[in-house]
Length: 238
Image 1 (spheres, rainbow, N blue to C red):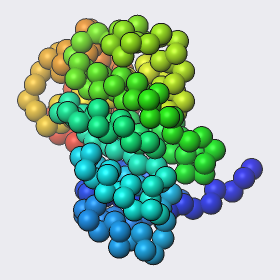
Image 2 (image 1 turned 90 degrees about the horizontal axis):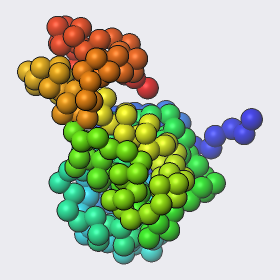
Image 3 (image 1 turned 180 degrees about the vertical axis):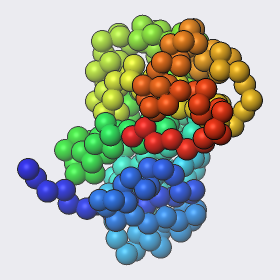
């Protein structure tokens, strides 16, 4: 078994749950703004740069630094509903977007390892943009029924092709990504709002409340009703 060599990762913005996961096996540094990145880059060249939100100007600032031109950039956010600059972001190479809730799963963490060790690079920007638009569609239409064919139609490619490139870019399949995202969004609504469980299920794309309840219990090991009753806000499903 090949021993993992610790990589250097810079997190820009707020500390996210992914930081705690990656810090176990890597050297991590957190800075509050991209304006501090050039200073940090004088000390070392990172293997990955992680943003908790993004403006295309931020990526431009990263790429202006010769040491950082080819460094992969990961954008994690709780939700990409309000992402309006995806066109300009997609023009940059070596950029991946992933919802925070999904970024913590073992499959995506393994994907990042392969990325940092250069075993599996980011898809070319034109191909990768298809995956980004698929993720954006999920974020903006979570309450709707979303199938593989629906996504493929939205991004204008063959369903089998979308399946292949999505898994290659994200390390996780379309259905698994969508299921994880829906359940985590459901947990958030369960913890932070007074919405009825059946309304939460509908809001997160579950047409059957019983299916949401069973899926939630399978994921978190506890029922939505118990979480609501006991006021639990933090559950670790990973």
